[in-house]
Each structure stands twice: as C-alpha cells, then as structure tokens.
Image (cartoon, rainbow, N blue to C red; front, side, top):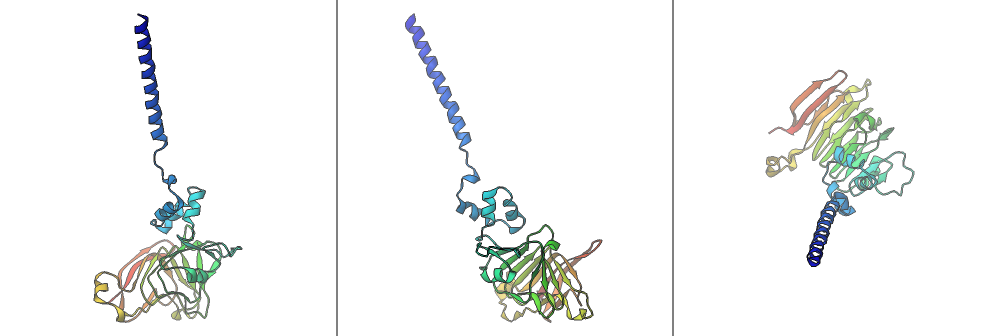
Length: 267
C-alpha cells in the first residue's frame, strides 16, 4: 500500500514540475518577443531612410534619445542652424550655402526655425530636398537681398517644402533645369515701386535636351506647386515661350491665396 502511495506522489511531483516548465517556457517566449529596438543602429537608420523627412522622420526623433540620434544623423539629412557654435559637429552648418555645398545627391537639408537665413544666388546643381524645421512655413524664412537675381537657382530636380522665401527685388526661385516641386511654402516679393521687375517664380527651362522617352515617362523639366501662398511681384510665375501653366487651382482664404499648378512644356 505504501509503495502505491509513493508512486502516486512521485507522479504528482513530476506533473507539477512539467507544468512549471511549460509556464516558464510560455513566459520566456512572451518576454523575448521580437522588438524593433532589438535591431542595431545601422538597421534602424536604414529603415528611417525610407520615411518621408517631414513629418514621419521628424516625428521619429521624438520617440526616445536613441531614435533622435539616429533620425537626426548626418547620413539621413543635414541641418542648417544660424546659432551653431561648434562648427565641428557633423552634418550641421551655419548657412544654407555651406550645407548645399557639402550635400550629396539625394540629401535632405533641414533648415532650423528662428531668425532670417540669407539666400542669394544659391545654385542647386544636384537633387536635394530643402525643408523648413517649423510647424508652419512662416517659422523658417529665406531672404534674398536687393541686387541678387534670385534666392535659389535650380539646375537639378529638387523639392522645397515648409519654407518662406522672400525677395527684395528679383525672384524668389529661378528654375532652369530638372523637376522642381514646391509644397506648402510661402513665396513673397517685397512691395516697392519696381514691382514689375519682381516675380516669385521664374522658369526658363529649355526643352532642347528632352528625349521622347523622358517625355512619355513624365521626366520632363517643369515646376509643380501645391498649397503655396504667392504674394507680390508683377505676376506669380514668369515662363518662357515653350512653357505654360496647367491644372491651375486657387483657394481664397481669409488672409491669403493658396495656389496649385504645374508649369509644363506645350506639347
């Protein structure tokens, strides 16, 4: 009888041990579930590179200190800060001209808010994206002084977003080549007696170098404007004889006009 009791107790003990092991296994699998934070810095930075700079990549910098470091890494974008004191900090520049010169094709340049950034005849000769760092375009201002032909001159496909560009005399943006995308910006020509010499956007792209294949695929030179305020000057856009405004749409707000349009070749 005693042997039967001992055997039953051993079976009970074994079953209890097995149940404990199952519980620990279940706990182990739950605690070791895969997490994005288990990835190394290189993998995370590669993932961040696929996000749109604004607002997705900008918002990732608000998650934690590690994500902020990776989201603001010079490999992903360059920064322009007028008040920077340590010029040895990688990826940060005191002027837009310096950032453009150091940028590689495809880079994004984030221009910090506060104050006015000087921009006079800055040539963009490689594909770049220039973005204002504020919540509104009025928080980041580029100013072109009198005597300059333009604030920014585009000779390559580029994008401008969330920025205010002001020109005292001349034009805010001079487009010569490539595809220029202007999204959510403010373009202003200062009011003065020589308004007829000012124009927010001047497009002089030449169709001579266009190939039929590029036209059919939509890779033509031109300008695309969306949700942008355009103020002052003789006219909103000055184009050459081979160019024309298309898909024009205007929304009348209480204090401003917002424009959507494309500048394309006459086909």
